[in-house]
Length: 350
Image 1 (spheres, rainbow, N blue to C red):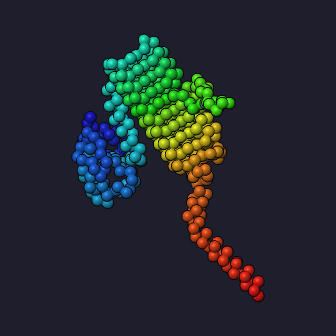
Image 2: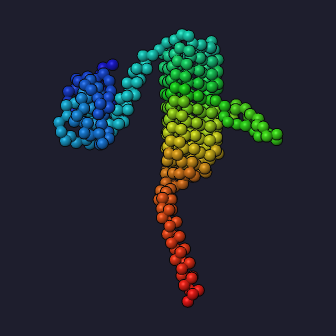
Image 3: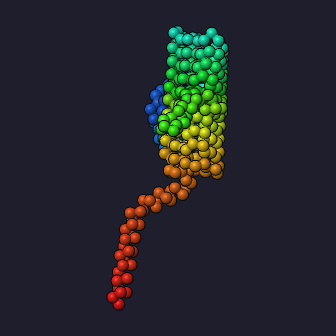
């Protein structure tokens, strides 16, 4: 696809500086971009490349001051990173809109309901009474179980598996290999030491505008629903256990695990490799540092936490500082012990 600077400026509501008719056919990092590509500058660390790049069009912040002449056409916006993301989303939308039709071989139950302008990739499976909305894209190898509902404009990438009875909202993106609605980890200990499986008869409900990364797993509820609220963003390789609730606009980084029946509030930020105990609450706006372990409810909203067990972030930094000083403190204690022993000996001999 080819776009000129004027068209791009219109999409991102930017102000043009330079040739409005210069065209690009692709994107590049500002330090590597070639002629015919579009780049952006948001991080001041890369400012030197603004004057060196071969990119034909560059998106920059309104506040960016030029220290040297720039050969590229510039598009100024309030936030270059957000504008670039908007442009990429528009580009991706245009590309995926071209995908329509049903590839073969694939299986679609006669009782399934299909919306308009959908795409079903080869080797996909759509079960009984499934409802697929308009403009949905199901890439090769996707499995849609019985009674599943998928909202308009949702994209399921290759190999996504949606188990029976689950509900997926509108404008959702689920990346390759993710499994939605597998059984929750529920077992009842028996008197003889064995365990008995507790049937998981609930489902998973994913609301609108959610994005879930590759190879994530979201377990169905024992009873009721595991809930991913509107606008939540989940990274790759995340485990969400049964009956968990993830609040709206919460973001969770890779390799995090949320244990059963935990309720995560809205606008929460969780770093990579965080683990939580089950049956706890995490307050709205909480920020949890990577590799932390949350063992009890975080009740105060909009606070930062760190460590295992997770504690207030500022306190955790003081604890780390003290821990680093422990060898010196041990040495000082031993020196003080020797001084006390000497004082006692001197008193006895006086």
